[in-house]
Length: 125
Image 1 (tube, rainbow, N blue to C red):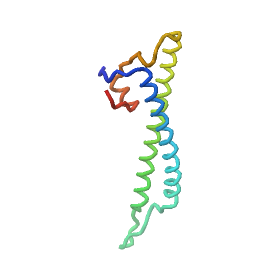
Image 2 (image 1 turned 135 degrees about the horizontal axis):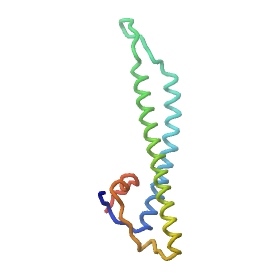
Image 3 (image 1 turned 180 degrees about the horizontal axis):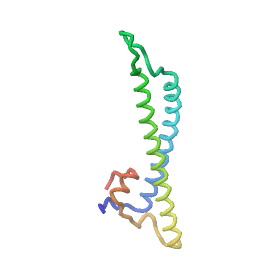
Image 4 (image 1 turned 135 degrees about the vertical axis):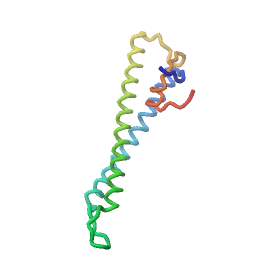
């Protein structure tokens, strides 16, 4: 297991809350973009006729589909990130509850794994 930075519980909790807010904003924006792209996708003809009279796939259709798929993947990533963050926030709440109020989140530290850093968007040491 690769080890990442060590943060105070307070700093980690604040970071996760901020990341969750950013993810929610991205989710709203991506949802709106997907609605627009869905309308474009349905309105774009799949096939067009080229100069020689051949029926070919419309390049605009392909671009719209690719853009839709990309936005859909980003949306899924943000939702997964929020689910992971919620689980980690729940873990912090359990730690705090089990301590009986003896934990000072501004002083107690936790060392993250590199995987956690990637999933939580932590970039500092």
